[in-house]
Length: 140
Image 1 (cartoon, rainbow, N blue to C red):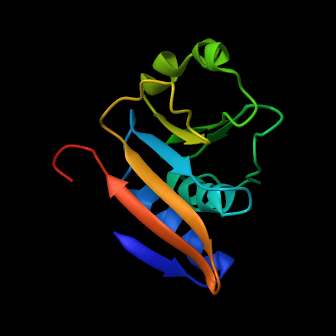
Image 2 (image 1 turned 90 degrees about the horizontal axis):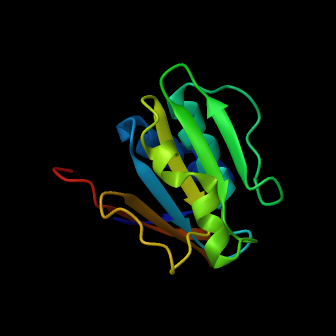
């Protein structure tokens, strides 16, 4: 699916739509240059998970956890990580959280990601953002 989003509220809304389809154990990979709207999309994912607090980029913290009434979002940002450091985040454990969904900004090409995932690519456009969503979960 490809979309054009003119304003920030549309990006949040898309996050809510994607978020409603997520289930525990799902993985969402967010691709896009700086300022393309990755964290804005996560705000919508968090709302759909039932989280009502503040959502911010985990660039310096590496990870934020948003415990919603429906799901827990493990929000990771790999922008500043070296290749070997990714394993130290405990990705396997996070993917097996019985209430958890893992959302990764700046997914690294040198990591072997599970094939069952949702991928979102955001790019800047003259009138906002362009978004491509690929749902690679079976049966969806």
